[in-house]
Image (cartoon, rainbow, N blue to C red):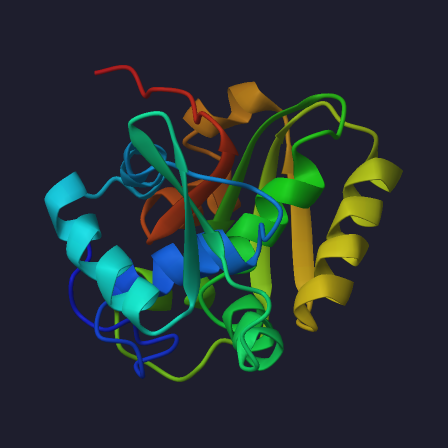
Length: 198
């Protein structure tokens, strides 16, 4: 759980709030329950509850009752919706865009973001990232991976640099890139990375 302000966009009260806004505003046609969001963001419902109510009060989130649940979604009618979405896309939301664009690429087992963006996402101080480094594990067609990276890059207006490795290379101690990725902060955008043998 990340509670300090994100170094990627420190204007929000907390990283949880920035992640909540990114999830809602980058998927504006999707309804979420509080439980859905808590699971997606790996945050306790009570922590999320406070942020949701602050954002409802600010008219950034709309609610709709369905049975005993409240469905939540971004209020795209709010006049700041468009610039807020753009800001979220360029800062705390790239992993959501990477997930969207790579999820349907055949042969992809996992997509891992590493490098400076992942480090800032996890709260490590440093200069703003200049690109997004993406490790694609699996056996996809190279052209499909580059097409997905191009689509993501167009959405976030930020270079996306994919590298492909077969899934089994994750356990290869002789692969310097894999060792670099494993020793640094990373964000799993899609799939699951293999578990290293003990």
